[in-house]
Length: 91
Image (tube, rainbow, N blue to C red):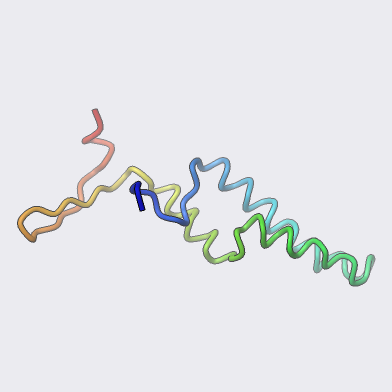
């Protein structure tokens, strides 16, 4: 990868949360509306999975990574690695 971001993290926390609301909302609605609309309500399931990029667990991991982005930095020198506070080292 060309940047430090994980493939699960989003560009911003609000964008990630909107994806979660749309994704989980569509998945829940597809099941909840089954008695009222029948199998037609299952059309919402792919919309939910698309918003979550196919994996609700991956969305949750991405939420944690998006929140922690920029807070910790790992640096390795001479075979010794350590974590530092990324906010303190920014100029």
